[in-house]
Length: 133
Image 1 (cartoon, rainbow, N blue to C red):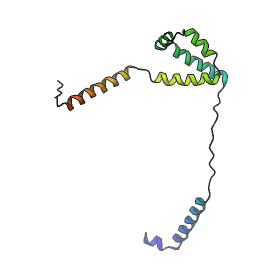
Image 2: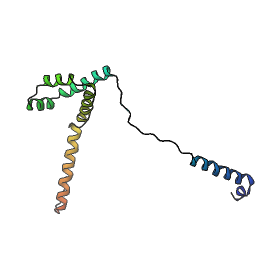
Image 3: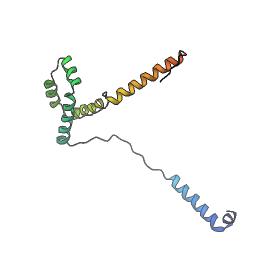
Image 4: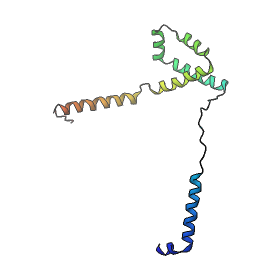
């Protein structure tokens, strides 16, 4: 390595690279930011959004809540069909999130596991022995 440093071309390459890095560092790019409007085809996405909302409204828990509030499922579907495309799309995206949060078998098992761990921690804090046979 010492021999390479003493070579004349090494110094020329080092100065050339330092100069190139200086040039690249001094050039500033222009950053632009803005809101991008979401555009979607009105006909195709409206049908998809209505089908998502309709499948969500057919859920027995949702139907029961609608009945509890005094709204029939047919009335709710009529209101959904009368919505604007933007509101319908927003509602359909909310139903996706609500469907992801519904309880299923895995969620139940995780809840039971957390409960068991909590009971074990409480018993250990009370200086009790937990023996599993």
